[in-house]
View (cartoon, rainbow, N blue to C red):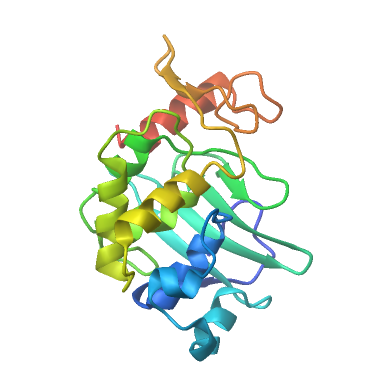
Length: 236
């Protein structure tokens, strides 16, 4: 598996982890969850009894990668960057016609993002399943694996029930609506909720200066890249 910037690292297919509710509890921790005193109770799991899953998620010698297909050519690779002293979660956008991949977001101490708006997230999640190693096979898995890259100040009323439905499908959470609210709130832990707009050139951009999708921000995508990112995420 070759991804720009990760050529020398031990990337492995992590798809086998997606069927275990413990994984989703661990994945939620990447959001820096706010307001949960007991992640195990919230997700209805016992992480202590699932050391193999926990070790598989955070193994320094094997970095799980989850590949989410888009409507058109391109994928989002979700990488657990298990580098000793620099662990984090990276969201990398790829397209077969691009000279190199583009880093959408990084959830870690030196955060980059957000990488996705709510409409983009739900569009990608609702994309029909595509067979292939590492590719989440249903909307619930695609939604939750991409959720940490979200940043949107204008979440619709459907956001909480949408996330709650995904939690109900993949976990034994006793109160998925409450946990969905917390997760959506925690998506703001690393960056300010972003306002998104479409420019005259067609690019969808945001106003959060930590995001490469914010024009003029340090490390921002070029105008051509911003247009390409917009079309690739939309599958157009």
